[in-house]
Image (cartoon, rainbow, N blue to C red):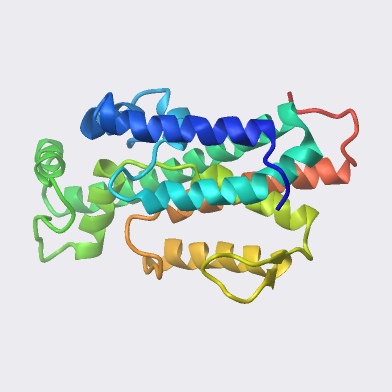
Length: 253
């Protein structure tokens, strides 16, 4: 791991400022309401949240920001050295916004599927709105014999659980690192045996795909797997384009 680059250093500082500011200045509740990425039909949704959610992290777990900043430090600097500051910033924020887009589209699908099932079960729109507003925490769903609990969970989660974290953008950086340094041996803190990037990063993405499709996660609950996959997809598209054109004068900005 080489010296940290200037842009990565600034991104790290901004993330830490958001994390500490959400505790000691704005306070956790209002900070999440303002800056996390809420469902597009939720009253808390604001147009700036696809950007600001990239600097927010789970305020109840320092491990969330810790792992993300570790990954940004470890993989971001080599990619910035290759792309340069301006191109790296474009890449990072594009991957993060792509993650927000895919996450929102999947959430919208889950919401609409659950909403339609409730309509078909005899609920009217006002009753559904009341159900969503009264369901204040995961697990307190209204039971209906005609609707599987999984549908209630996805409907509630899509509407009431906001997305936070730099993970989507960082997954884009991870993919870029794997494409540029496929044979780099990654000795990560939670895996004692070094694994080449060309094996480790695809395996990580496949785990997210498995969790996103099945709902089962070995890393815990409330992980935005589709945001990870969205960031990885947009990162791959950009790096594939730039590698194919040998980083010549063709630009996306």
